[in-house]
Every structure is written in C-alpha cells, then in structure tokens.
Length: 516
Image (tube, rainbow, N blue to C red; front, top):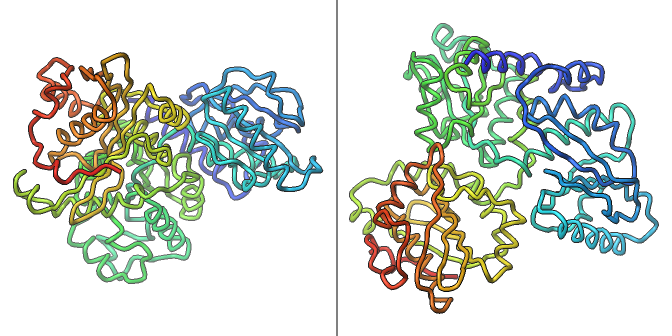
C-alpha cells in the first residue's frame, strides 16, 4: 500500500509538467528517468520520415500513462512495403503524404491498399498518422491519429508526443474510464460549503471552465459522481440555489456525501454505478485525501485538482478519457442507470410490467466495435475473458467456424443498446461457448437464462446436427456472478445437450425475443 501512495504522490508531482499548457522538452527528459510502475509496450514504427524526435519526448508521457515504451523502426520507405516488421503491441504508420504527387483519390486508394496489407499481417492495433485522417480507411482495429502534425520542430514534437501517449494510444489499448468521481470544496469551486454556505462559495472563471469540461465528458458518456465530506442537506441546497453552476445535479449519477473516508465513498459509488474500481478516476484538491484513497483502493486512478486551470487541461488529455469513439452504449449508460432505480417488484411483476424486449443479431459485422468493448470491459459477467481485439472480432464474424451473437435490451423505461455478446466456435457436432459477456447494466433483471438460451438456440437453428454446447469458464477476480450462474445453468457440468436447451427455466421472456 505504501508503494501505491508513493506512486500517487509522484504522479501528482508530474502533473504540472505533463499537463502544462506548453510542456518543456528538458523537463520531460528529467521525468523520463523517474521510477513509476509501468508495463512494457512494444511499438513498431513504419515511416517515411523520422519519428525518433517524437519518441524521445513521448517516453515521459507514456510512463505517466503507465507504459514503458520499446520502439522499433522499419526503414524509411515511401512505398510502405512492410517487409521489415517485427511483432509489436501496436503498429504505427507514420507517413507524410505531402511527399506524394498522386491526386487525392489515387492517394487514398493506395493508402487503403497498404493499410489492408498490414492488417493482414498483424492483429495488433494500427495507428495511422498522416496529417489527413480523412484518407485513412475504416477497418477493424485501424485508427487515424487526429490532429497529427508531420512537422518536426521542437514544439510540434512535444505536443505530438503528448497526443500520441494520451489521446491516440489509450483508445486502442485500454477501455475508457466509465466514471469520474469528484470532490466539491476547493475542487469544483473556491471555498468550504459548510462554512461559507451556498451563497458564499466562489465560482471563479477557471472553475466554470472545469465544470464545463466535466459536463462535456458526461455528455460523451462518462458517468459523474460526487464524493464529498459535507452535510447532505448542504449539498442539496448548493445545487438547488447555485444556478450559475454549469454542472447540475441531474448530470450526477451517484452521490456519496457524509463524513466517512473518501475511499469508502468511492467503493459505495462503484456499487451504485455497477462498475469496477479500476474504471473510476477520482479528482480531489486535497493531497491527503488522495493518499488515503491510494492506500485503501490502489485500483482507482487519481488526479490532483488543486489548480482548476491545470485540472481542466488534464481532463482534456488524461489517458483513458478522450480520443474514444463514443457509441450509443456510452450515451445510454446514464439514462439506463436512472431508469434502473425505477425498476422494482418481483421477477414476475418485472416481466409483466416492463415490457422487456431482447433483440439478437448473428455475426453483425457493423457491431465489431461494440462487441470488442464488451469483451474487454466486462468483468462481473464474463465467462471466458478472451479480451478480443476489434480485429479478432471481425475475423470471427467472417469465419464460418465461429458464431457471434450480439444482444440488445430495451424496456418501457430505457433502451440499453447492445448489452450482451456470445462468442462460440463449432467443432464437429459440438458448439464451444468460448465467452459470454453481459454488461453490468443488464445484471439484476433476471434475463441471463433467456438471453443465453435464445442466443444458443438461434445458433443451433442456423446450423445442422448440433449435439452439445460446451462452456468455457475462466476464474476472474470479479466474475463470481458469471461463475455462479453457469454452475446453476448447467447443473455443474458446463455442458448442455442441444436437445434439452429449450427446457431451461425463466423462458417467459422468449415471446419478447426477436432476431435481426
């Protein structure tokens, strides 16, 4: 635990450098030698101009993001032949298109053909920095580096390095943070609510910009929570009376207000939002509070919010917050949580009153991104932990040996979007259920049996001579709900005969299930 506190303090010390308005190369080089826990990351660069200048600046940013970079380089190659590639966690295509004379249409076709060639060689994520993201083909696991500058001046190198480490790499390697938990006093405003009262606290121009940044993240799908040492009645009065706050109470999905430890408040928030602690970013201006949280729950990421201007810049750059493609599922999350609080009653009453609808799609190529998200994000209800890349999902969908089912959920209170994924593989007369993922937002509604049963029955109807379904189960740190469900569903055997599939319980929802 002491190591987590030291790491938290070190990262707080780095903030003024890595989130500076104009980071200085000399300061970054000093930080690159600091000792922080990191994970090795192999990055292979295909280029037609130097990237080494950017890489030297990127090391400090990457270490702050939790990676120890290992860069390898192909030769300078305007043809992008990819003949000198090595195994890597990320493939970076660093190409200055200004060097080519072809017209735009021909250049786009050539670049698309080259990226498809690299896609066929590697399952790793591919980042393409070309100066013109509109020329990059839309392929699974391929991302254009927006605002990539091909200039190699000192200032451009530093900013490109920061974009690379904070905005381009995290979206292809990590799930996005699901929630931001934020303190109130001296964080969202200047002053102490309990002493100054709602009218006495000061909302500075910088705090306005900070609150607007949080509101923008909430609009993009990140949940907001408040964790504060204050009287709940005072906090309620604050949000009722301060109409000048850009951040309003209806933007907040969970509250923990009282006099207990902040770490316990964050644990309560995680339970309320049905998310893991490692998917929460916590903001507080009090370094002592951050140390307490780091010691008690080191899984939570922390941001020292003493300077509102720096904190606002950090929210626009913090690894794991921005640069992600915001899908419908992200925008639906807060609405779905609000609707969940209205869902009451027994299982029978639930089925009868909520008019639940389940939608199933077999091998939906247009949903690769969401299916990938479910594979890498779900923890509580994940039976296989395959952690599939978007490219791997696309290849499964295209290969008749595999079957992939996406499941949508809606009821009279909300449309939850795609909340489930079932990944299977056929071998002879047996279907191997390699992974079942159900979003935590859908748990607790009693739909697991019918969701899986209908998905497997749909696969069986479209295949021939299916005899058995065999389930893969991997023990994870938080997937007890999935393990318990599978033991009950299969009577401890982890195998179900296709002939008995329709005898599973809780199938009163089948009439509400439809296939695309």
